[in-house]
Length: 103
Ligand SMILES: [Zn+2]
Image 1: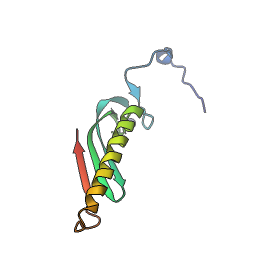
Image 2: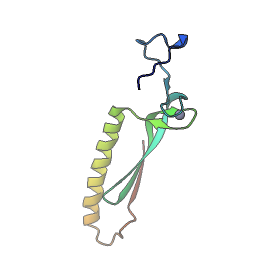
Image 3: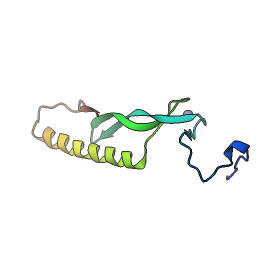
């Protein structure tokens, strides 16, 4: 599976290019923002304006491991807070919990 194209332009393997290629469509991936949607314990959480690399061709977004970790931590904390809040609010109807965070 390691088919490397030996075109003249690809001859600088040690240099990490500033513009990465999209694994989906080989389009140019540029810094941008994305939106991440989670659904945990029946609560929908949308995190907006997450730093990401976005493909300029197909629109696919990629986030780094560090960003993913940060967002996961945020979402987990929010889920806990929401759930403990919901426990004090017996009237809150099921299936209507939704949170949107824009940073
Ligand atoms: Zn793409």
